[in-house]
Image (cartoon, rainbow, N blue to C red):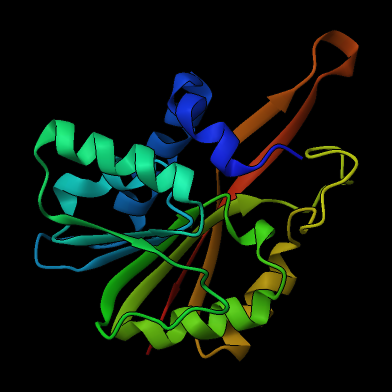
Length: 204
């Protein structure tokens, strides 16, 4: 598999990635009462497409990823645009110390299926959130492994009911799912569609 560091320089060249981020952001805005006072935290931010799509509806945002290549591209974008209210953090969600701050909204796009221990990730996200905060995770519905193909060692999407149960065991409540985007691969008879859900949950 090509690493995310290697993909970083051309990541934003794919219009589908931008369209996906904008669709996920629109769904978050529709389901979560966002406000300029809210502190946002994106994990697995890549080049920041989702956070840029949410920026005008939130207060300060911390963007985290474990790919230095992605974060280099993100920092260059922030510098070029003169943005000072978005902080970049290199972070392995499972293993690195978490930020001391607590956040009002944590969110991600197509990240959770790359994290080996789903339960640990949800537990750490719960710790990061303030009481009453929201968690928004966009990811793939369960699929047969054809999305990434041979050699992929992450999760082949998620069954919604199973992920809901995991989120509730981590302490989240009011877990809800909706389909927010569809990714397609292949042409003609070989075309496959892969639904992308948005899970919205809340920390009591």
